[in-house]
Length: 218
Image (tube, rainbow, N blue to C red; front, top):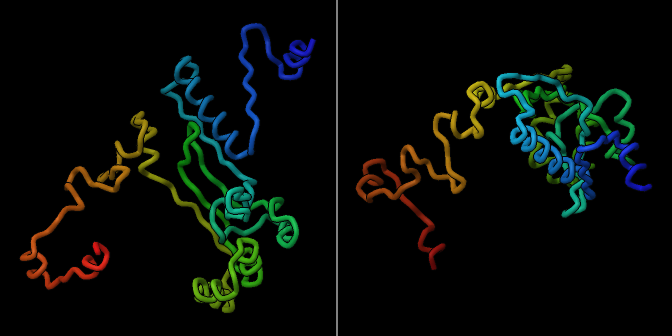
């Protein structure tokens, strides 16, 4: 009886596979998305010659960091909250929706943009949610906040990732296959063999001196 009720509630028919994942929303959604993508390829359900575009909007401004027990910015700390949602900053940051917009193609982010904060008080409130102290804000963002005092207008934009678009157009699985100078996970450059050691004569020719290595090695 329970199986039948479950099938009805999920809309499953004979031969369907129903997967249940329990856990924190961000990690479970990522796991299910990766599984759906992989099954679409293995079962040949996704047409490799089709390109489907969509804009992702109404994204949360903050996400809760379970490990460090604090709020992080979902995109960045400078997104303008959507109209009517700024009131939640002081007591329920998880409800704040950002004025951000990501262009997605076949599940891959092609461009990312947002309307930016242009009000000093609002920007300081966002920094407060993120756990920045007054001294940290003053040290790291004083120039930005001071600029707002001169009447910064509403502004925003969007930045496309040309390399990611080329990756989709060429059917590659990794962005390293299409960028000019790809690096390995250990930050090595296979094309130039960098970083590599240099001769003392080369350093002298360029009037360079390496300092601090003896202290680190000891």
